[in-house]
Image (cartoon, rainbow, N blue to C red):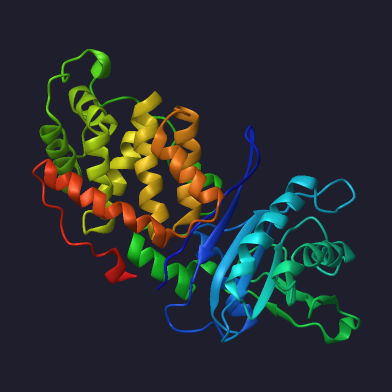
Length: 377
């Protein structure tokens, strides 16, 4: 299974416009051979069921393997045409996708605001096709009301031009996206089931009480650990990752916050994400993201974003970075990853940081396990 990545485009510094992108997301059982199977697999590309979305699928030269997929909100104006922010995103996507050398670019609309055979959807794809010309335009286009079992789909576009005869349109019915080979494979490798919506990703990072103590003293800033050397802080992180504690005392949370806010310790901890420690690290980074505020929350969310980004889990990485930037806009690593996402850096490019993580861990006396993420992917 290939690595997935995500990109984010900002139309301005104050108004982020999000989209999700996947790389080389093939079916674990080989190329996807039918339109129904392809459309059913789409939610598995992103980890959640898209709603009111435009999905672009770039096929590899074999014409059957999806090498890149993009989801963006179907942001429509009062007249049913794409709103300006959506058009800006499409222009940026055309720039990014131009380098893929795709044999075909497929557009899929998942939207329930009009009938499937409404001319509105055909007009939307006509606009998208024109703006995607720099990467070849839209080869085929389909629409369905929802990405759900039993939902009907129909073809509305062919070879970069509107279809002239509706009698020749392909039609079909989706099967259950939750049991598609793509979704099942992701569940096996990540332990996460397909989410019902993108909003569920954000809900997983919603703030929680600082600790499990009956009386929380919130000692993170009382200086108790000011003299604790980074070697001991890294050991504390390592033990929490390995043991996956089911209870977090106020003192433990404070120590872990100091650990992940120490840059040397944090850099070493980035290496956990490519080893067999990945699952425990994901649990801990998510737990700390929920329990901490300010810089601590930003650092935990950034560690989580890096974990998802390097594995290609684009939707999860983007949401985690939103949390990090909101918690502390000055946190440097969050800024670096955010810049990388906005400029289309592929997940493979993050591997140059992993060598530094191994070096940082070794300097603190910890030998990280062998990297296994690429072995699995």
